[in-house]
Length: 80
Image (cartoon, rainbow, N blue to C red):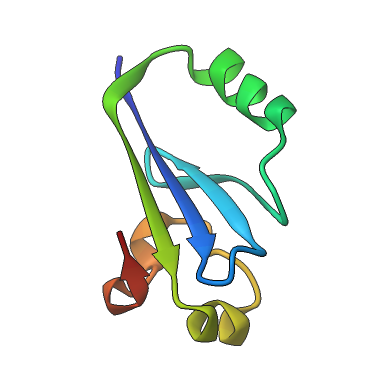
């Protein structure tokens, strides 16, 4: 089985999140190595692609946190 990882960051860089297969795995001010170890232990195998996006600060501030599902982020607020 292949798992897809998406890394999200606020534009100013003070809030980050990890989505695995479209579901929020973690969010916080930074992504500590222990979080990555948890991702690896839990999912073990990943696809060759890891995507990274910046999210508009305005959108994130209005919402307060990342949604549980990556697809719930409005695409016009995502930047590669």
